[in-house]
Amino acid sequence: MMLRNRIIEIIESAVEKASAQGDIVSAWKKPLAGFADAGDPLFAELKTAVRPSHGLPSDLLPGARTVIAYFLPFDPAIPRSNHRGDFSSEVWAVAYIETNRLIAGINDQITGLLEEKGFRGTRLPATHNFDEEQLMSDWSHKHVAFIAGIGSFGHHHMLITDKGCCGRLGSVVTDAVVSPTPRTGRERCLFKYDGTCRQCEKRCPAKALGGDPFRRHACYDRLLENARLHERHGLADVCGKCAAIVPCSFTDPVGSVSRKKT
Image (cartoon, rainbow, N blue to C red; front, side):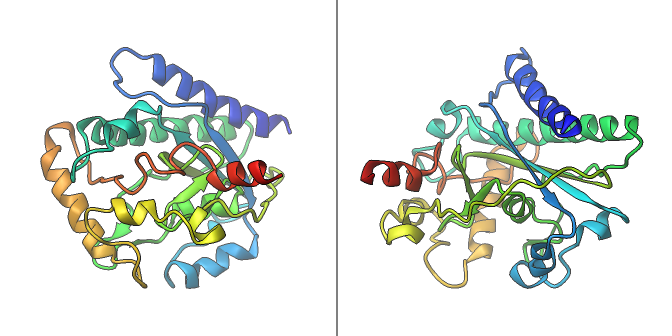
């Protein structure tokens, strides 16, 4: 329990300090963290759900025992800036770049703590670890976060947490044992819950949502357009229109509906 608490403290403290740092434009709300048993059978199912080459925790770290996942929710001003227009806002693009750096720093701190305690940990990148032809990753942070009990998938293929979907995910694999976070099995997407909403589909400028399968190449083409638009800031292959100012942007909308019905 002490190690779990220290890991959560590192994540929360890093976010708080970054939000107050003068040379960082972005800001974040209090993060969420979850833990999964590295032997959870759902990891093996990712070879079907994502792609056959998707890694197991033990592929990333022999002797893996736990996977740590966390979600850094954006300050609401960031998605609000991205609400209008067909291309991502400058604020959203910068937040993507700054959050990726923040995740790298958090992973360094978590792994440093683990090493102090005699354990090992991985320093996984927040993004750009995917196959550029199939546009699929061999380590999907959002699927890992689902297994760690942080959220459930929405119609937009993003993870919806209790603090919404606007933010970034990070993960660390370790050989330390931390008790897993229970998965509630609760649905958080309004469309999957009762067939309503579909705001994300309507908001997608690439028309990538709504079909089966998801038109991931159409989505990626739009990301690359945005990357060119914002290249002066760094690599920002982003969009976020499907997540910006929709019912699941900042909260679990199904939970809100359920509470109103009771």
